Length: 305
Image 1 (cartoon, rainbow, N blue to C red):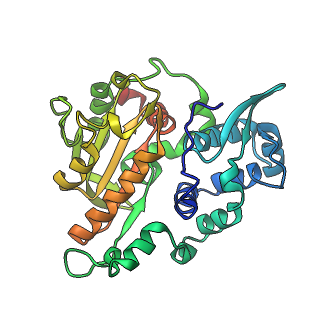
Image 2: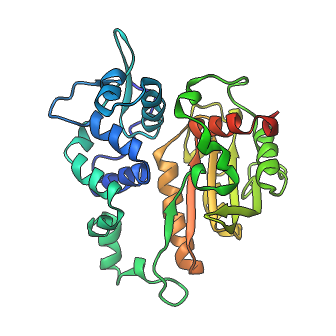
């Protein structure tokens, strides 16, 4: 059994479709690999060699992207004889694979998806479409480090490079923070007492050439877990909500050199919606997991020394 927890609750299929398509959106490689893993009616795992041959990609490139997808819970990474790795689809997503791929490829079609959240909002006098400040609609976007102009060097790093182990395998919060301060010129690390709102704050974050205020919460090896859950976020598990509503930012990230559980992403999405409605502005949110943390460390070796 994979060490990655099942990402989506099978009782909430519309939410699973929405979250899965959001994770795939913007990456043709991820969409194509997802399509290959879920292709056909057989539940037989697809080997990395089979996927590479079908997509006419290098095996190492497929391994890098697919491993990242597996960490996000899009499917499961397993071992098979004679192959470096293989990937197995989730039963509860197979029936909706075409809809997921369609929404990921054509984001506008997402508006037709009715989730429990949108149904609830409609029953509550369309609460989700009405903001606290003058009826603004929610305006949020899930982003990755590739979308941040300050991190443009990571765009040059191939996914296959992330398969290599770095030394040390996991950096302390302070060391990772100090490197980010150098890269994006943020405010230095605050006293880490478990009740902080964020670990780094900067007004120098750039997305598509525009500057935004950004808050980042970092989690290091001190949590003694390979997977980050909401309970690890601060002394009382409430750091995410405090980060959103106590930090005057439009961009929010959670960083951890391991697996970031889907429940963290759900919380980020939920509070991004609330923040957007509260301030009437666009809110960006995302995660920097093991894969993206390594990309940063490889792209900015000098800053991480």
